[in-house]
Image (cartoon, rainbow, N blue to C red; front, side):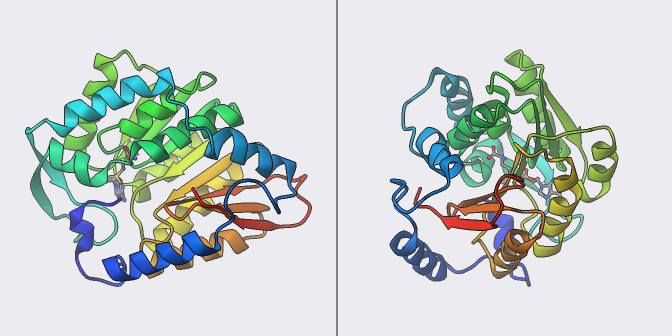
Length: 278
Ligand SMILES: C[S@@+](CC[C@H](N)C(=O)[O-])C[C@H]1O[C@@H](n2cnc3c(N)ncnc32)[C@H](O)[C@@H]1O
């Protein structure tokens, strides 16, 4: 979830807690229960079994969760730039590492799903937009097939904290790219030929989200996937998600409420969309 700064009012403001609760209830009542009944696509069935329903605690989760515990107690003050949804351009403020960890870092349930998804896709090259403290980057780096995890962060003090944590743990396959996605992403993508898994977790506004989708999708192979965070977080994000699902290049889209997954699989002859309870 974006940090508290994103609660500022604006066109991109998040839905009220009441609206979110109502939307979540509707999702729970209408989503497929994930048991696979009524899901005829073997690929989606396998994805549900191996990625969504796997509740085992794996050894791969230990290192990122140990790191999460340490940052939750870290009272170091960081001077950070506010970026993304709801922020006022160029504004700065001080926040403790612990407060960032509490408000901006993905819960284990979803972070571990990203790990299982990367394993399922046998992802070799992974791109994350929105490093924050680096918890999800660590999960992605645990994917055994991953050769490189490139993660982008616009706030340099937060990027420093994440980078120090990666180096201290010998996670050398994680490469941190600093700067605003809007400025740095085009040049970064010129250096990449294929991205098997893209995780978009920053700047939750409609046009930037569509822009990141349009820039990355040409590099996503048939077996690849793009994951968008907080697809029901605001009206803008819901509009962006609807446009992404309707895009002619997307053949399969899956709504898990907190995140959305899109695939470009050519063998999926008819475009399909699923809402699955997770
Ligand atoms: C929700 S946090 C990422 C959390 C992280 N993926 C995790 O769960 O461990 C989003 C991060 O994206 C960064 N961000 C937001 N908008 C950005 C932009 N336009 N350019 C660069 N970084 C941005 C913020 O500074 C923030 O640290």
